[in-house]
Image (cartoon, rainbow, N blue to C red; front, side, top):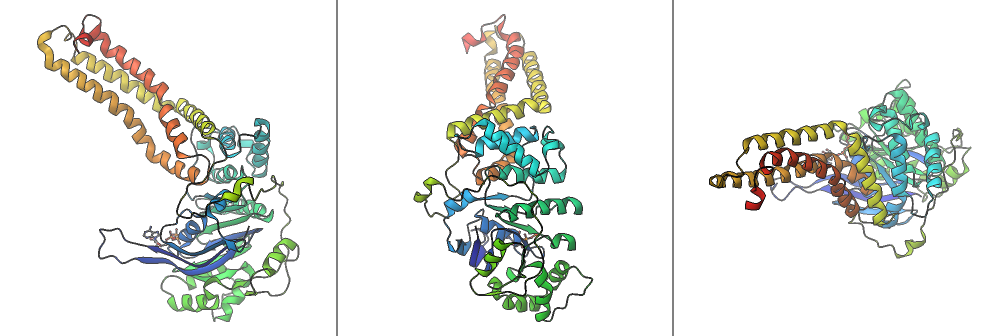
Length: 479
Ligand SMILES: Nc1ncnc2c1ncn2[C@@H]1O[C@H](COP(=O)(O)OP(=O)(O)OP(=O)(O)O)[C@@H](O)[C@H]1O
């Protein structure tokens, strides 16, 4: 699947109350193409618009985005595109309290259709674990995984339904050079199997830079280079920017096009026609790669054949299914994240409910806090209202008791959800965007998963303070 974009603009409009702030254009009519079978990176100085471009291409951000997005040279059908792509965000948003294998199995239940047998799901999961070098840690809880393993787990989770297009925002952030190289080599292997992999990277070291098949450099919202890594230095020379032999070309181009170097940005952007031109050095070993380059619409510079593509030693993943039987009725609707999901709503609810219950049960600290909170509050209320139930002159105290009781139960229970939600919403956003489940089953499972703990804690609390009030009295009768 080839991704093309033409005259892509991204404009941020100020909020209605920011009357003195004018709209800001982050991406300025940029063009480009990311081909299948390549590991592509978007790089550039901080604030150049890398994440904005990735968000616009993945469909994560559609407000303020204008221009043409194409898939295999055809106008892009957003609903189909969402089925074919996944987006792995910079922060590793991984469900806590579960082991790596459990998490992958839950993901398989959500992402693979209901017709897939459990045995098949297990085979797919263990195959991906083997490919990504995660088999040894499969029984490790996700919170104890190293940074590199978490990153690979994020990739593994999205590989379960084998998307042909993968977007990654800063996959090497927080990783040392060795782990970054391992992660990029892995992505490169996956890309060379035919996937389109696009990631953003801030400033790769020279060794990491060489791992990319395609580089797209942005600066100040303009495209200043597009093509293979080995063509960057000769290209820079053509516009009078001579990268010293001992210098990392990635560092050089970023320094040369840093925000204040507007002259260089203008020169380079004009030389690449703001991304319409690509510079490639053809590779012998990969026919697929070769054909792709030749099919670019006549504007590609094709220097001599040279170099080899590294052998792909990775296990092949299941064949890619590009088009579903039900794709014919696709609605061309860009302004939405709403798409259909691989599993039924009921099955999504059951899987999510199981996942949430398991997480809650394993969250011993949370359970203990709630236990002592209910115990102490039950005791305190019981002591305050001790022996007041039979006294008819204590009407106002009885009222206070009832009000306090209602407020305690209402707010205690709702606060659990309110406090958990800011963390949950980040996970939800990523999983929902990547079509794991729809919002209704999620919300239902989120609410109902709290029922067992709510009921048991309420009983504990009630035993404590009602014990004091109701054994001798008839408060309930009066109420
Ligand atoms: N929604 C928004 N509202 C206002 N400004 C925005 C918005 N989104 C992005 N920007 C601005 O656009 C510019 C580019 O942002 P973006 O996150 O794409 O940069 P980046 O190249 O990914 O930077 P970094 O490498 O530091 O993450 C920044 O100056 C940022 O402040």
